[in-house]
Image 1 (cartoon, chains in turn cyan, brown):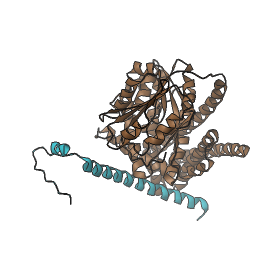
Image 2 (cartoon, chains in turn cyan, blue):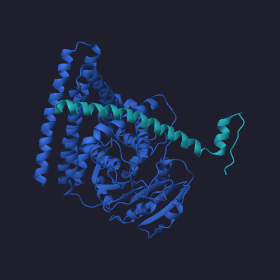
Image 3 (cartoon, chains in turn green, orange):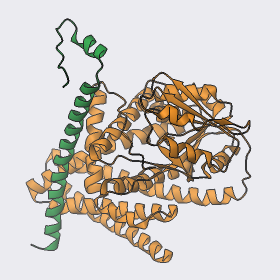
Image 4 (cartoon, chains in turn cyan, yellow):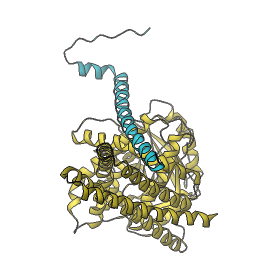
Amino acid sequence: MNLLSFMSFLILGITILTMIFGVLAYFLYKTRERQQQKAEESYDEVLANSKDEFLFFNRES
Amino acid sequence: MAVIQKILFVVLMLGLLSLTFYSLTYLENVYLEVNNTFIRFGVTLIFTFTLLVITRYLLLIFFSMLNLIKRTAALEHTEGREEKISIIVPCYNEESVIIPSLSSLLKQTYKYVEIIVIDDGSKDRTYELARGFEFDNGFHSLRVINIPNGGKSRALNHGIREAHGSLICCVDADSRLNNNALSLLVRHFEDKQIAAVAGSVSVVNRDSFLTRLQALEYIEGLNMARNGQAFLKLVNIIPGPLGMFRKSAMAEVGYYDHDTFAEDCDLTLKLIDHNYKIDFEPDAISYTEVPENLLDLLKQRYRWTRGILQSIHKHRESLWHLRQKPGMSFVMWYMLFESVLWPFIQLWGDLFMIYLAIEFGASDLMLFWWLMFTVLDIAGALYCLLVTKEDLSLAKYAIVYRLFFISVINISKVFATIEEWFGIEMSWGKLERKGRI
């Protein structure tokens, strides 16, 4: 395998891996945001979002 | 040493020309040899995109050089101005950075200044810490105002309403200014048509691979673009960390609006739409902290992208006002290209190249395409680092800049664009500061 082919193969591999990494990182960021948003919700917001459903809170130890 | 760097820059530009020629010839061969509509369409798209990006880079470097020459000549004849400047510092939960930030404002060489800190309902000790700085000697003052949390644009507008200066300087609370920043910015307002001047932004926490890549991006991607745009006096975004405005012009366009997540971009577009000129001062520097981990960086870019798209959407009619408002129309097309077309085509280009490599074994093309952009990035980085007298070792990061950094950012921008298109709800998403300024 000559240098040109090796470099081409390397760049191709890195590009594919970077794209997969980029997509995963984005969804990881979205998941983290969703979790943070839930954790920061106030009692009133939770109550407003629940509509007519019963709410159950966990007692913090 | 400087001669060697200049020779290296010329060699890189020549390398870029030959690589561009080689890549485009390769693309032409693919087009001629493969009789497939999809591939021909893809090749044409990449061909056009490559030419556009290279033209954009070369024009920006060229305009940036012209602006530098023009600026050097003009500043020799500029005298100091004595207009009152009101500095507005909006802050929300900035206890880790508020002390160095306010200290740097008090060290400014330009003294005819009032500093107004707007605490936007912080839940931490920001208000108490800022109150410790309050003083008033009639000529120079600092006061702190506490308002219920309502967002950055409302806080800025509140500060502007309280301001007595004819010039308004908006500064982020997580930034530190160099001591003569205000003196440098104020000189541009000799020209009555200048409504705003953008300051330069420099990364302060360059202690990891990711933050050094961002440092390079700020120097090459953001400041070089602004320097080039400044030749036409059409800088499209006054950055949050440092920007100075003529208060009368702000009043004319209705100050900051609350309907986008990029209030700075929106205000700049409103000023350009009213035929005002927007300039850039590269030596007025705001040192700011950048995100230290990838997820925080994506969070920041997500907000920037959606904010800019909201601004473009808000002013979309100006896209077609080519004759009535050529400056505004040009800025809008430029922003549309940079924010939407570039990330989409770059991503699509990568996918198309992977397809060509797997299907036809044409992986050489991908190598040359990457090499071409990397040489372009290294040449651009070297030029910017030389002009700004920045750390030249940052140039080496240009090798992975496009291959890794820009690709990951572009993926996030593409998703943000899709979400904006479908109107998915978003929140401001404040970044956590480490207090490194």
